[in-house]
Image (cartoon, rainbow, N blue to C red; front, side, top):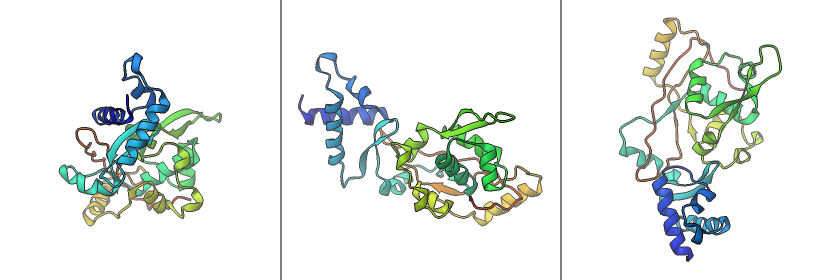
Length: 246
C-alpha cells in the first residue's frame, strides 16, 4: 500500500471518528495481512499533517491520540454555524484549574490556602463534569483529603500532548496570562451579569467564590462530519471580593 492511499484512509478514519484515535487503533483498522507498522502509520500521519499546512484544518497529536480539527484561527468563524453561546468561565475557575495543572497533585484545601478564599462547589462540579480533573489519591493527614490532578481530557481540550507543553510559570505573570496561554479569553462581567451576581449575593449565596462567569474559552474545535458545538456553563456568584492567585 502506497503512502498516498494510506493518507486517504487515515484521513477518512479520523474524520469519521470525531475523537482522538491512537496510532495503534488506526493500524488495527487494517486486515492483519496488510496491517502497517506503527512507524508507517506515523509517517503517513506526519505527511498528512504537512498537507494541511496553510489550510483551515490541522492534524494534531494530543494526549489521547491523533485528531483532525478546525485550526484555531478559524474557530470564531466556524462557531457562527450554531446559535448556542460558547462556554463561559470565571476568573475563579481559571485560577483553580491553573493551580491544579501547575501544582498537581494538590488538595482542595491547598488551593483554597493559596487563593485565600473557599472554592465554590459549582466550580469543582464544573471541572469534574468536564472531566478535566480527577482524584488520584488521598493525602496522609487528618481527614485524608482528596488529591487532585488533571486528566487526558484536559490535555485534549487544550490541544496538548503532555503537561510539559504547558508554558512554564516563569513565562507567566499572573492568572490572566495563564488564561491566554491556555487559550482562554478572560473578559470582564457585563453589567447585566454583575447585577445578577449582586442579586444572588443579596439572596444569601455564601459559597465564598465567584462561580462560572462570562469568560469565553476558545476551544480547540474537533471536526468529524461536523464541529461539536460548545455547551453553556452554569453561573454562580459571591458577595466576597476575589483575590488573585499567588
